[in-house]
Length: 116
Image 1 (cartoon, rainbow, N blue to C red):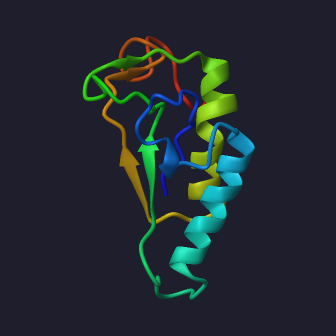
Image 2: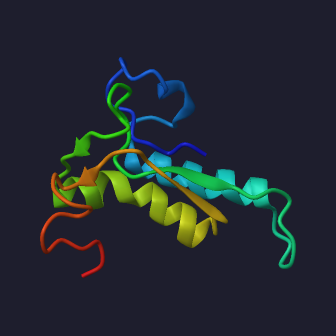
């Protein structure tokens, strides 16, 4: 499922997402993936890959723009749906976004880490 936060109606892929609410996106991701993959402990009905990790909601220039996202916005807005998809939904895959960076410089910026 596409769980990108949809904030700007000019973005051409908004109809693929659950919207701009991080809590709704998290619940959607978890349930969508659980429904697709099933509950068999050994086999998946279908492999569900959550996309697009992370801060991906710009249509033009998306193959190289630097997504400047604050630490608070990352944790409060962009990560909840992916956490729910991976931890609770047990997604079998994760598709990366095209953006060049998060937090503006480098992959996570100097001295910035998602964990810790």
